[in-house]
Image (cartoon, rainbow, N blue to C red; front, side, top):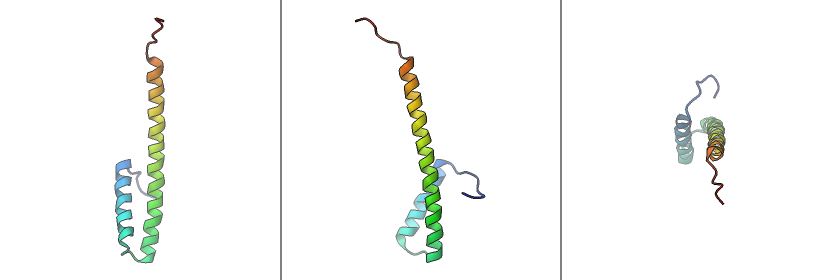
Length: 75
């Protein structure tokens, strides 16, 4: 994503979906198809990194929630 403002996850996902549709139709000339493929790879990596970060954050929040629960020591 050179010289572009960083997109939101949703914007990147939508653009990636459009690229996949264009490539699947097979109507882009070779040079354009290669550029689309490269852009798609970049968007995929961006989306994967965002999802991985979100997953890590959710796991951390779940750990915090578990640690803050009162224990039942009435055995």
